[in-house]
Structures are given as structure tokens and as C-alpha cells.
Length: 253
Length: 253
DNA sequence: CGACCTTTTGAAACGATTCAATACTGGTGG
DNA sequence: CCACCAGTATTGAATCGTTTCAAAAGGTCG
Image 1 (cartoon, each protein chain N blue to C red):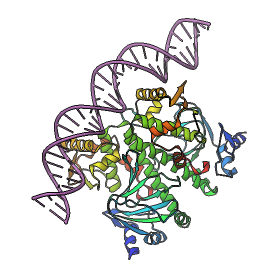
Image 2: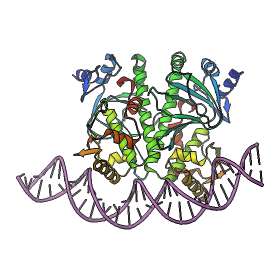
Image 3: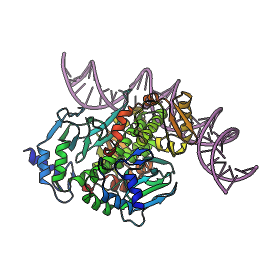
Image 4: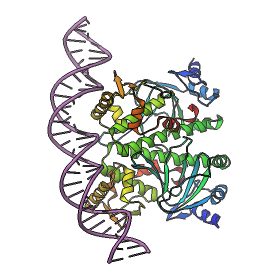
């Protein structure tokens, strides 16, 4: 039963929330789907994801929902480093220092497959193309972070938020932009602020500003309509096409 | 001749500027050293590193010198994303979107080995442990960027600059901190600012502030003495030991 | 020595934060 | 069904950290 669910999600050109998710490009890996289906976990919104049973590091494959990776300073301030979306795979360390130490939180109800690092390594040996896939996902994550780092260092709040919205759009859909686009972000303004390095109050002001200019429309808790993608891209100083190329992993190109 | 130079640099437990650089942990790879020695390039300080001859992407192994990866906005503002130091390996794209699009500049006189992506892939297949090494280097780079992203979003100039100094210290030496430490950073205040997201003027003020507190001493163009590492770590809100673990790749642990 | 670049310092301006008060929104129970 | 509640969004005003501009001081190299 679980297996059939996974097949429908991960199979080549099958659809998840209106998008196709070919995992290995044109073909699919039955072995991988079997492994995934035997390690499914469900998390409620807001729950912190930990791995007490596992020793050392873990690998998380996101099948559904939004996961956030965040870091917290001593004074309690939290910065969201990245979101892990359906189809993404992320490495999470507990205390070995191999990967960045992040708090992992399910932003929405989430369905994950969790592997111990040892199991994952074995699987990478066995399954053709998995190593390449993981590397392309990591590379995409690194590219995203770099773009945000650039705008955090040299851009103002408008640029950062405009960029974040466009990043979400690019990650959530594969449409090209030929007019207004619409999508949903399962985040409060507080969290969008923790992601972009802006206070929640100023997130509000900035979004309102975009709305007033007719660039954006925001309904009930982050139902976003980008009414003028060209203008938003100009504020974000990004080419949507280039962005899609640099932050989209191989298997979705 | 070139080969012998490389051997002395990359060999197990050989010394480079007072540090040991075992590439593959306890053993070394003669094949890799041969490949590297046949692709050596020398760059002058300030020169931009490009790959006209190569199609698509490249892999750069840094043997000596500091390399910066930076991004620039339309208004000309430059953000330095990371520095690539001796012993590091970085992937650089030209226009394929596989890796982040960065301008690559030699901050000092630099000695590099440059591989085409195809050559590199072939080599990874042939040489045991190389894939693992590269992944650990990439993971360390990602962890560094995450830590800086946290402080860029939630920290002030003091925290960012304190962190950057400690990051340099950790990457440049393997000493544990049992008192004042001393090292050199081949950067102007302008570049330290472009790295930390602070104006060069404010970098100056912040460094002066640290000096006035007796935490730091700075001589002729960034000869840094951290007189009070504990205090600096407190300002940076980082544990130096933890930092070393999370941003140090496998082959140097 | 003068030319050039980097660092330093001061003062004004600006963007974003913080604090605080008010207005929404969705969910719960009377 | 409406009243109430908690969480979230919105708005205004004061404050703060940082930038910007500009000018002076310091260092280096021909």
C-alpha cells in the first residue's frame, strides 16, 4: 500500500500537486522506491525532527510538506537557512560535524523517508545515479543559499523579500512566466522574516508596499499572486530563467 | 619538477606554511598528484580566473594562495560568498547552471590545478576516496556559508566580523586555542566588508573597537593577533571547537 | 618627493528595528 | 449562532545601527 503511494509520487512524469517529479530523469529506480517506502514517517506541523534512534547522521527524503532548516543564536534569535521541499533530499547531522548543525522543523504536515547514514551510503553504492542526484540537489541548495547570501549582504529588505518570493515560485512550479502567477507559501510573516533576515513587522510593510504598487496580491495567510513578475524580478535583481537553471537540480531540468 | 613540488605539498603529513595537509587521510594518491601536477596554473593577485578553453564547468584545486568566489549585483555591489584556501577543491560553472555562478578572483598570487568537468568525473571514478573527499569539502563550505548566513540575518556587525576572523583562524591553523593566536589575512578592509556584509568604513570602526577592548591587535594590513579568543568567540556567539568540527573537512580532522 | 591606495575619523542621513497599540482571522465552546 | 480567544497582521512613532559622504591621515612604491 505504502509502496503504491510512493510509486505514484516518485514515478517518472507522475504528478504531485500539479508538478512532475521524475527522480532520475527519464527512468525511475524501483530499488530506491522500495527503500523509501519502508522508511516512511509522518510529522505534524511545527514538530521538531530528531533522530534519537540513529547514530551519527541521517538522510531525509521529503515526499510531502515543507521542512525548514534553521539555526538559533544564544539570545534566541532564529534564522531559517533553507526550506526542504518535496523531492528534495537533505543530510542532517546530530553531532559529528560532517554537515551543518541545523534544527529541522516540519513547517506543514510532512511525509519523510529517513535513512541512517550507513544505510544511505550502502544504497548509493547499489543504485545507479543516486550519488549524482544527491550531488545535484546539494549543489542547488548551495546555489540558493549563495543567492540569498548576496542579497542579505548587499540588498535591502525589498530585494530580499522579492527574491525569496521568486525563489519559492521557481521551486514550486515549473511554469515559465508569461503573466501573473499564483502559489501558496505555508509560512507566517514571522518565518518569511526569519528566512530573509527582516523583522516580521518590516515583512508586512514591504509586502504591503508591493501590493500598493500592483506587483503583488496577498490573500489569507500567504496566498501569493505575483501580478507583475517582471517588476518583482527587477526589484530582486534576478533573471527568473537564470535562477531556475541555477537552483533547479538535474532531475527536474 | 612540478611533480616533486606537488608531492611536497600534498603528500601525507607534509607541511605547507606550517600545517599538514593529508589529502586522503592517512594515505596519499599518486594518481591524483600526477593529474594535478600536469594541470598547474599560476595567477597574479587580483586576476580573474576564467575558463574559455573548457566547455561547461570546471573543477579547481587550490595549491597555494587565496581565491575568492563573489557575486555582483547590477548596481556594482559585490558580495564575497566564500574564500577557497589551499587544500580546497571547488566547482565552478560557466553557464550550465549546475553550480552557483560566481566570479572567481585570485586574492593573492595563487597556484591552481584546473580540470574540465569531464576529466574530473573520469578521475573520480578511477581514484578511490576522491568522491568522498570532494563531498566533505563541499559540505564544509556549505556549513561555513550557513553559519555566516545566520549571523548576516540575525547578528550585528560586531558578531559578523568576530565570526569571520574566527573562521579564518580555524581554517588557517589547526592549533587549539590556549592563548593569543596570530595569523595573516590577505584582504583589505573593503574585502572583509564585502565578505561580512558591512561597509568598509564600519569594518574599520568595528576592528578598532575590538582593539580598544584589548581583544584584538591589527598591524600592517591585516596581521591579526587575537589577544582574547574567548571574548571574541563570545561576541561571535560560536564555540571554536564546534566550529572547527563543522567546517573542517574529513581529511583534516 | 609626489602619486596612489588604504585607513581613519566625523557628521548627517537613512533603513530597519523595536515597542506598543489596534485590527484582523480562524477555531472553540456556550 | 454569536462571543470569545489566541495567534497573526497592521499601523504609528521613537530609537538605533549602519551607511554614506567627505575630508584627513597613514603607508607604500616608483
